[in-house]
Image 1: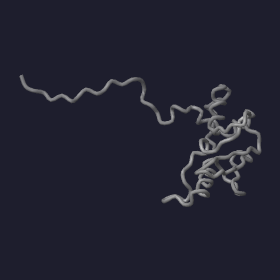
Image 2: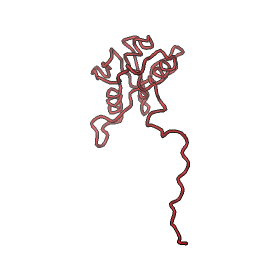
Image 3: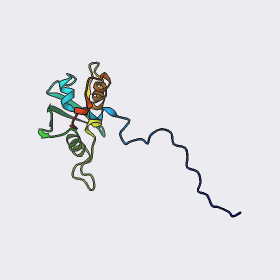
Image 4: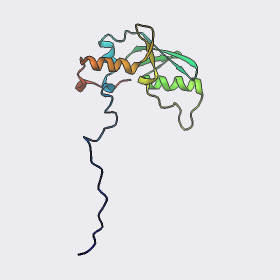
Length: 138
């Protein structure tokens, strides 16, 4: 009888491998869908307190977010420019990478601030959106 070297047993797997972003299925909800559903009425004010400084912008249309008088085609680009306006240059980037859905906030009917991503989640949870027809926007 001879000695066999055996590889250590792999830990048991529990369920399917997690796909990046699988925990936020509402990420497929678009700005256009929020407008169509009536959760956003254009023009729509958005804001954020970044490093103690308040920045404000306005959603004027799908693909038109205005910050400091300049129109941007996405929430993320406008958010990155807003961050740069407060913090200055970011090493290695002209505009810092920013998730506009989580950066920008709006006032709820109760006056409290909530991230635009919460509006997407609300619409998703209403189950009134056909995600197979969604296009990425924002």
